[in-house]
Length: 238
Ligand code: UTP
Image 1 (cartoon, protein in one colour):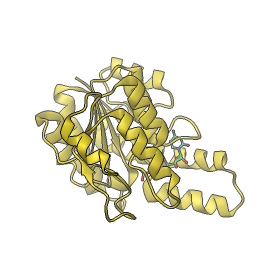
Image 2 (cartoon, rainbow, N blue to C red):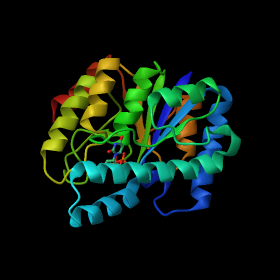
Image 3 (spheres, rainbow, N blue to C red):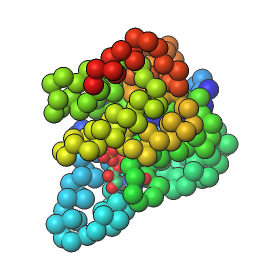
């Protein structure tokens, strides 16, 4: 299978540590023994800190985005270091370059690719571009909720939903100031148009990614084009 794994910066480097990055690398190596894997790494708190300071200094959003992208690539480089020869030696800056790395049987470890989006969208576009079989978001939340669980006590976690339902949730969440959606709106749209099989799960324990990919077992949320009556019932309530 062709698998794209998006690793949130806050999951890979909650605090910068060789041990944690190595744990992720060991999981990726194990999955790569059986599957073709691409990693997309986020910027986490470091990116937010740098962007915050740049904003105070008067940088506009596009300038801040470039700063954020640089941080995603710094995090990608840590994972490349831990993966040694298994990874392509540079974070690819384009989808084409990442595809070439896959053709060389290396694991591409990407960061951001263009301003105006986050690595959520990078992972979704690359999955679509390469007709991947599975897209996994390893994030700091344990799945998709009907609302932002950090601000809404009635938020319900969904085991499974359709891409259309994901878009509805993301748009609703993004309109509430101060809330964060589980994936950005562009990523949700790409997942919808490509019909990509997507899993959102808690990446705090990297072995949960291995379990999801290799055994098909996880406690997160499946995003699949078909819908079941059960999940529709939960969605009808939000
Ligand atoms: P992230 O993908 O890490 O943002 O990109 P995020 O989803 O908010 O953070 P985590 O890692 O999941 O906690 C960090 C920043 O880099 C810029 C954006 O400014 C983004 O907020 N970026 C990233 C881009 O401009 N383009 C990209 O393709 C990726």
